[in-house]
Length: 86
Image 1 (spheres, rainbow, N blue to C red):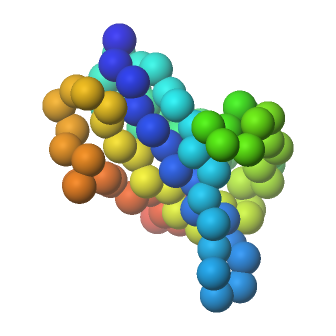
Image 2 (spheres, helix red, strand yellow; image 1 turned 90 degrees about the horizontal axis):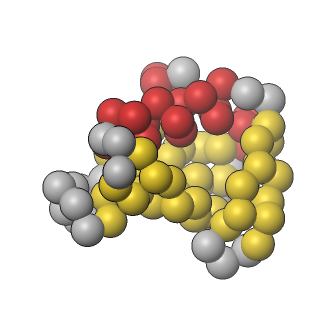
Image 3 (cartoon, rainbow, N blue to C red; image 1 turned 90 degrees about the vertical axis):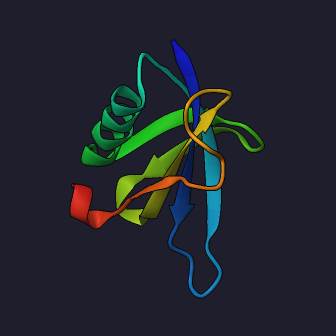
């Protein structure tokens, strides 16, 4: 199993903010499927790295960055998951 960070960038006027979640998955593709599954629901919850337990309304997510932690993905090349992935 590998660890990933999912940054959910929220729509909020000109200056959006993100909520960060740590995911554990067998592969990058599995982590991507976890994120896509969450975004297909009306809302989802998780424990954010810096905000505690959060409830996220999927319609408020502008895009998602998925980044590997100490595995095969470089930190400077996250993949973006936006409306086109839904």
